[in-house]
Length: 146
Length: 146
View 1 (tube, rainbow over the protein chains, first blue to last red):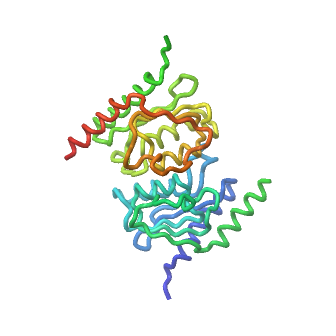
View 2: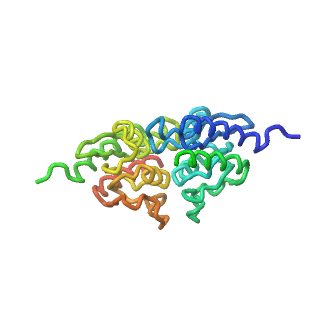
View 3: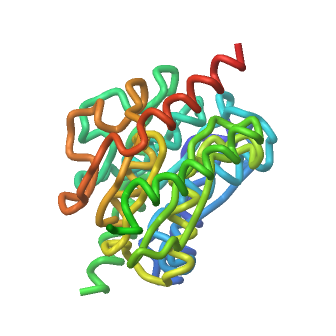
């Protein structure tokens, strides 16, 4: 039995999303993992930082770069609770991140809507890990907002 | 005769690109202008910050948000010496920036290669202001690198 499963790490990203939820931020969380170690954790902070670019993935990637001191994140995996937007996918491209594991798809602003090779050709993508939990959190958030 | 022309502001962005050049960074500069006032200036700092996402536009946009305390940058213009990549175009989308003035096109990684509506529908785009100066700076930089 493996301890460090994709579900294990996605649940850590979900913890970040829940922090966002409690802070009245759109509940998206992200972590970066290198060799089964979480090297960065972040949640969406667009309201708190008053910066429309402060998405969870951007903050997690910058923090991972800072931690590793590496030019690229080829040996890392990004776990994110919502499919990255174009901006964040572009950031993933520049980071040459090895793998992206996504919980919920974003049918409005997800990068995959573009039908174009936005990511680095070597980046592996996986969808649907803890999809239900991530989606429920987002749905609840936007329902409460109305 | 108008003082605050697009050339005037692009030359300010070029000053930022030259700072990058002197710091051995890919020479791209950006400024954000609101009501003829420069509210943020930035240059590419991917090497210095060891962060592949630290493009001039990202830094200039975050700084502009911070300065204005506004949720969006609809009344602002971004002047940038090289066409934004997808990440930066995505950031422009979220910022709802009013106008983007670009010096040199980026035929490799420019957002316009996608042939898709990446930017906010209300964002106005203009190319070619001080194109020669911006392009020469980039060409010289990469020639020196070889």
